[in-house]
Image (tube, rainbow, N blue to C red):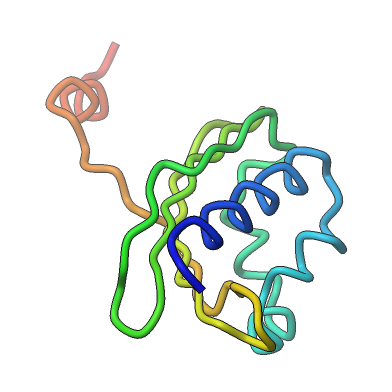
Length: 113
């Protein structure tokens, strides 16, 4: 497994999500993630209109791929950890990347009109 293989699998995962084929997308996940799919699906801005791989980096014993997902309900960044499972890159962890609150956004939250 190398960064290019992870990038290719991550791009295929993104394309599958945009196509709305959650069953096929689940094939990229480890058994443990598939068994607990609800929390992962809950953070996705479904239906997706666009999904891209922002980066792939070495991360401990595997690779970290950051995905940018855009849907009708907004956009989110997802950090995925990939490890070799049965000879191919597989997502073993996924988490939402919290975006920092900008000064403009924080002043809008506090304002009353």
